[in-house]
Image (cartoon, rainbow, N blue to C red; front, side, top):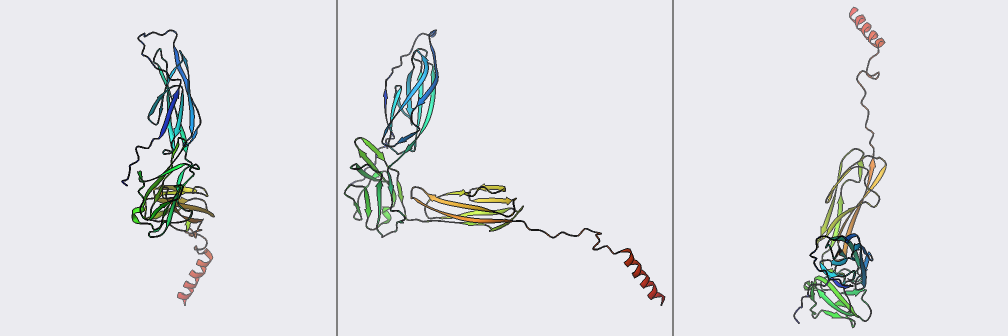
Length: 328
């Protein structure tokens, strides 16, 4: 079977109620016209992928306003907008335009709504993929008795001799992983018109590790350098975290390098560097605990101090001894 490219993933399904048609006006003066003022969007701040949600646009307007909507670039008309996100994107950007049908004056309001996706492709917990070994991926969170279709790199999955699907299509199993099995897997769950594109998983055979170089003990007032040294066989992001608080003193961070001059003795600082590939579900981190000390430097005696300055009596005795010696 030839691979079928998935058509451009539909992000939203839009419907609008109370549709208003706007007709241009030829009159330039409108003594009984007011607004639109105070345009607002009422509706939830969080959407669940596959479920409908209603948003209402209101404005103070005489005569009553007409309304146009934009949702991630898709257009609709009417005061009430119904949105169904399919889970491909993590948020939806809404914009409502209220329009005075007499004066054609407009007012705009925007709202960003987060999308929660209950469906995701997951590998077995704690199991790493290795070439020539069995592995599996599960379409987790799909509704019971739903129709499940698998995609790889945005194309309909083509099965080979090493692949099998469970009776409900929810689990994709590999009897022996091949290099060709690497890629980005997604599942699409459909039931009763509810269609959800899952959070995907990147199947890859690389590993991640990380180390932090730098001293374990530092001195107050002295600049020190710490470097996050990742070993990423697959693409990874690098992030410093400070779970026990930010360093006290002079502190700069530039990508993988931190320069720090501490100012508080008898304290400890914890540096953590995290490397991660979210699509592959892989991460690694390194932690370094650094102790801050204050070194007491010896005090150099001042010139002419009592420890070095001979007494007048000693000088008199020495001088008298010299004279006596020469006198003999």
